[in-house]
Length: 360
Image 1: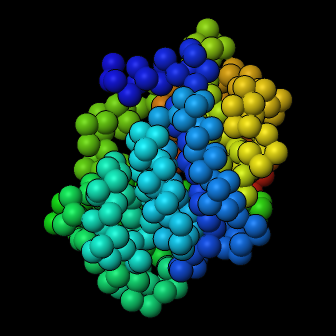
Image 2: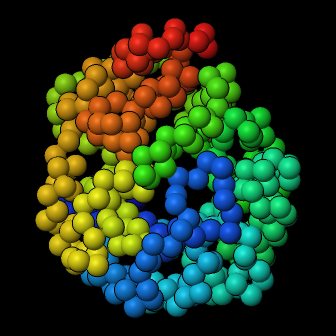
């Protein structure tokens, strides 16, 4: 058992919010075609409010702090916020597109002991990357920013979100990461917008490309043998009655630029607001958060008896955005199907109402 796993178990036992993602702004210098955010500023928390929230999080036991946006460098007070986070001894990770990172900013990030910086990279081809970000020259600036960070000694990860525009480029993006000494992660899911608009979902890869990614052993690494194994069958019933669908709301949560608290950035079910209540009071007493915590795998419609029950990556946030946080996430059903060629009950049920399953 890894130390991280042990920390998660202990945090769950003690009711501690071990990890929080804090979005500082939804404003951005890019307007990515798949982005789920409204980039207008509808009244972000000011510097004093954010510093106070950081103090409250530290007092509540938060250790991992992921600072994201929008684009975090749109906030002129970013380094004031990072200095407070450093003093509170959070393990800080940043998410950025890297466009605004220059040498001096990279050195300041390194000096503050930031654990790592995740940078969005969509393609090794300028015409593809820049078409997605809708910012001319963004690939060049992103790679320059990443290099400044690497030169300053900061750990960098390239996050490669895949859609039909860039589905064939991930191997070259991964090679580029290796050449620069950066880590690499891939995400094969385009999510709906936070306001419920599902138009962005149409950007998802087709079944053939998704199957190629989900079966790529070089991406899966040491997990390939387990993940690519045939479906192992339903979760044992006694395990289903005790298994939590996800850490969201149990040891982790999300805070928006406007103070809204949700179980996860991809689970936009508002459970409180730090402008109206103390963070710890929301964490301990929110009726909505306790509702999320009460859900077990046995409650999930069709999931506990599913042939993919032991290996599915079902996201409760995606399920919520699809209409029922106690139901399946069809997008995750599609990923399981792409990986194994075996359709879940819920996917078959959906396809019977639409069109036949494609051969994978």
